[in-house]
Image (tube, rainbow, N blue to C red; front, top):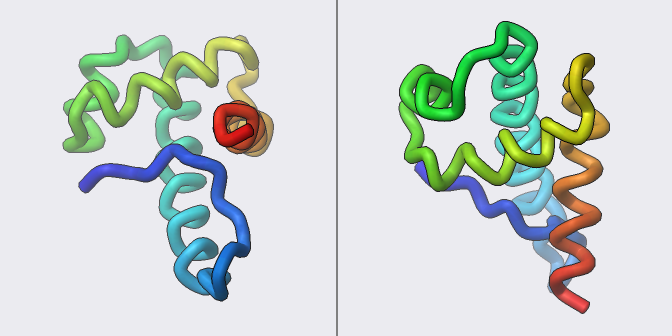
Length: 88
């Protein structure tokens, strides 16, 4: 299961689908943040979440900016802001 780490907007009537994607992403962000607080390495987090390292790594790196609290809301907002910038 891969998570689309792109900005999630309300384009073309995709509101419900985008909301579900955002919820899925937020859940993974929250879990990664909890594991970062416990100082788990990237590979261990990916294994714990049964995801590829390539899926978890962008979240893991974004969370670094919010150490040592690793606030999932701030990490989630950062990921969306970074991806929104990439679209421009």
